[in-house]
Amino acid sequence: MIVLEGALSIKAALKYHRRKIDVVYLDETKKPNKDLTYIENLCHKEGVLFKRISLDEIQKHTQGKTHGGLIAFAQDRALSTLESVIKNEKGFILLVEGIEDPFNLGQIFRTAAIAGADAILMGSRQLETSQSTLMKSSAGLFDAIDLIMADDLTKCIQTLKQHNYTFAVTYRNESSIDYLNFDFKQNVILGIGGEMRGLSSAVMEQMDHAVMITYPTDLKVALNAVSATAVLCFEVARQRR
Image 1 (cartoon, one colour):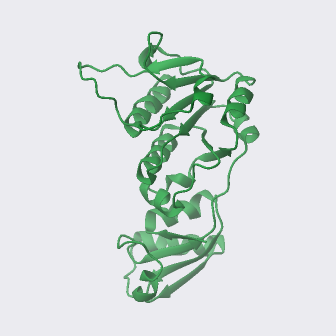
Image 2 (tube, rainbow, N blue to C red):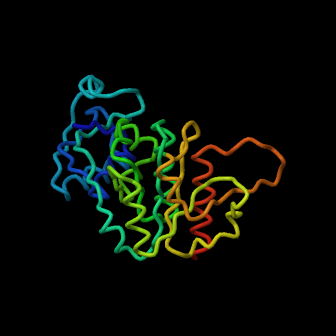
């Protein structure tokens, strides 16, 4: 059981149908507003129980104080299969590995969803963080994008290559291509690694292209994973307009 907190998370969970929602609770002292009315109507439409209870009862189930008097009890989100994502015509998959901070991971989901990626591909043991935190840090967009969790990322990459995907990794070496000169119109898996560990050696061995973000300065400090993801995802979107 997962406790979702706040209007953004709960609206997204109701909208994207990635998880079963058992009940939505609202602070009984809350005055009606546009957001709350929308959520209540959506609950009725989707057949989700909507109840007003005391704030004290709500706070027994929350981590912080940013819930706004609104929580939901829900199940884990549904996962997608590699086969279902391959059928999508957009051909843009973000592979994420080694990013452990739930706030950074949530922001990556948010960016990928907004930029129009088909899916995020992750190792099956990577999602140990709270889905409630991921929903909050992604403004609910954790549920907006297909998520594939795989025991063997290498095998997934190889399968995608058989379907005309190329694997590009954010990596700086002598053969790296400026991201502005890389062809993101083709079917692409874009690999993003965490700042501490990066991508695993097994994943790196599958790399077809190293892509780098060139700076307008001579500063040698690397962008963090969230910033690099934003730059690259929106370059993909720009090229595909």
